[in-house]
Length: 123
Image (cartoon, rainbow, N blue to C red; front, top):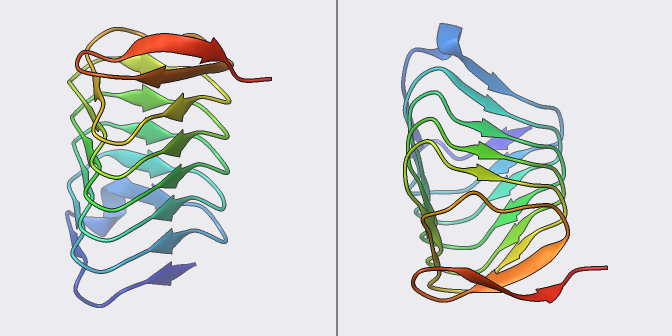
């Protein structure tokens, strides 16, 4: 795993970051967080408390993941996408740039907008 030295992290005893993950500069990662294998958190993303991120997910610059969110595997989040607390995003989801997730999202969809809505299946 690669973690830029500028990353601000909570107590490392309560963080799990999987092998092959890349955590870029300007990041804030709070506490009780599980980040899967081969996850990429690009510049200036935030990850709230008690969040789970599945394997093989990528988050472009300035994504904000609020506390207690659960994000599945193989997600791709465009620049500036956000999710509010306690929401669940399934596997194989594409979240459009600037979108705001305020509802749970099923597997295999492409979502966009404020609030984010399904605009297509992701097959």
